Length: 196
Image 1 (cartoon, rainbow, N blue to C red):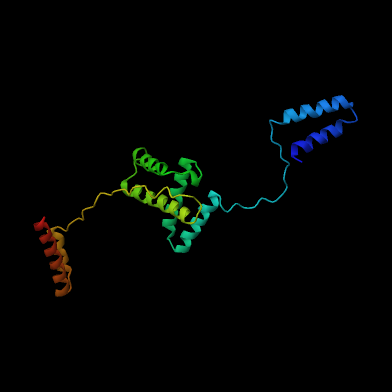
Image 2 (cartoon, rainbow, N blue to C red):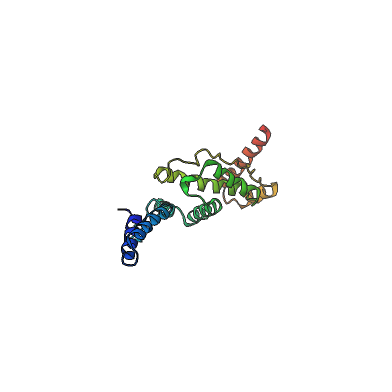
């Protein structure tokens, strides 16, 4: 017997002494018709089990697995801050995140927040690795980060020593081996400049 049927029977039984048979039957029909549009459930006093497949549980498991891997606290904080920002921005369950959601987040960070390419690359890496882990651990059916392109970083040109700095290094050398090592590096640098 459904919850609706039980409720109707209880109401009819409670009204039986106050209403005659025909009105009682009409009350039962009206209750049946009106309650058809509603879903009734009994309040439950049972213990609710912790859902190990929820997004919060998955996030916590990810953090624990990274700690077990021996990742530094700074890197772990970067993961947590990036994932928290990403999820606050999107407000979707992990399983509903698509590749374009990640791309849009990265584009917004670059255009609106004016974040550097290096920061974008780190954030992209955190998000992609997080979703890769969710996929491998079977929290989500597909990996949305697999098709997110890497961010190309501008190459930094190393600053060269001036002639004065090279002379200071040579004079600071304590033996001929150190002096020759400095001369070798300076020679290689000069040779590369000629080749270019």
